[in-house]
Length: 576
Image (cartoon, rainbow, N blue to C red; front, top):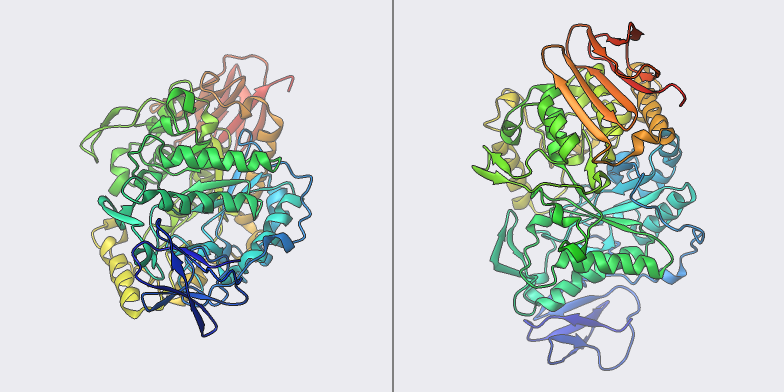
């Protein structure tokens, strides 16, 4: 590798290789290069106007954010996945994983040893929370600053390659969560190099990324090259893009459209498939609409409306962003229309919000009842199974796994894990650590649901340790019962063509508050749920049906289905 750095703001740039420095020369576009032609060997830094900093495109950081950058030769890794062709989004079931808490060791290699659990569960893809180098030993990864270097404490570049290779050997796709809307703040030196950020756009994290201003071409290239590198150098099967609504771009070719096209092309060139998923609160179906119809052609988006409806219906919580939701009626609307807010008025926003999804196949929307956000951004990180009883948690699972959406599970929900998922950090800067700690306390100070409870200190190692999954409990009591429920639902989804239909014409739903039932039609299948404390009776239009799976007492008698309280019954045609 020959040293090169884009730093149009710099007056001088040097390459530092273990104390030996040599100057780099600048061209007219702001690129600094080593004219000697010497290659880098061993750890290195750039010295920008006298400040020693790691390479912003560093491929490895074995000593963390402030250590020296290290070379990584992807060609030396012995891949065994030559026959792997990727996995289409259609039919996928995604499992969101945080490497640092998935196992007690918190490494890629340790996670590899648990892949048999995921195969047995019945998921088809693992979505890994961000692994770009972030501050300290543990964290969520969304405050990373060196986007190209897999986190050293997880196992670095080759550790991640071993994980991906092992997943492919188990027929599991790997989706990587990437963050392009902000960096740092710790270890974020990009402002020293060039106009990576602009005050023309503001985000919750400060100045927006410069995607459409002066000198933005190289900023965009920094992001696009990173996205493609995960496909080409790490054989990843898809990307999940964090908070894409914060990527403000007024150019004719939006960064999301350009990124999706380059990721798809890179995978195709390697003889594989890859998909791109966006997280967005805009409820805008144009994100997944084809370019020919004026969209960006992402493959899917997260859909929080469905989650929020389920959560309010089962918990009764209506504080904060849940104030816009009433419960079961929202669930019905999402199942039939994709979004709740598809152009209707939002009280929280004080305006109309969203746009109708129309006839878009519902596989383009992820459906879930739990995510790292919805669990971890609570004050004490409670999972749904910590807030409601087992029957209600089973209902949430059934709604997600029989929906027309692409289902996503959050690690541990399948066995109602006792471990919370709390917000934890390991900032080495005392001032920043205290700011994060106090900010967390202020954030939840006005929430009545959390009054009288101590908000865990994100910087306390115990907060991280509490969040690690306890694998010893999966065969015990209610944990084992919940795991059996999830496995049964996933087996049924895999074997029933009706439950894999992705609408919208094949899906209808209805809720009767007086009778206490919710019904969802999925092709010829019927999902009937008693959402009350009393037994209920659901009339059946089809004479030839059979109960394929139930979470409680369910009996067909006199052309009707009798359901005990808080019971799910999934019915299929008798010939199935």
